[in-house]
Length: 150
Image 1: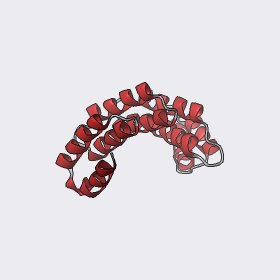
Image 2 (image 1 turned 90 degrees about the vertical axis):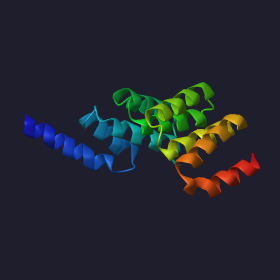
Image 3 (image 1 turned 90 degrees about the horizontal axis):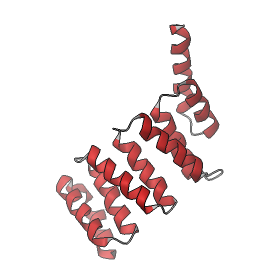
Image 4 (image 1 turned 30 degrees about the horizontal axis):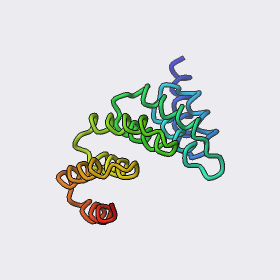
């Protein structure tokens, strides 16, 4: 029994390394508790050129945050999909959750600044860009470039 489960997880891991939605669905069927697979499927469904499906993407990304609610990256990925659907309330909540879970990670401040800029809240965006620069000045050039256009 244990050998069968180990084999299933190994096959799922191999399938999940692909960017094909069907392979990812098979990986999830073999290892349904692995949030990384749902997150990856959500991103594939959201950004696929040949079969983008934002509703399915949202289901997968929400499931990833349910399976691993303390993983900031999953919340940030959900925020991106919410933005694609112009669901500001969803995106706001997901961005804030990612920031709360990982307050010292510059990439989430970058994401928050861009989110608020895209939704017309320049003051809030600049607050996050300021925090971003305090965390990592390597972002200075893109932050100043974006800020000058705001």
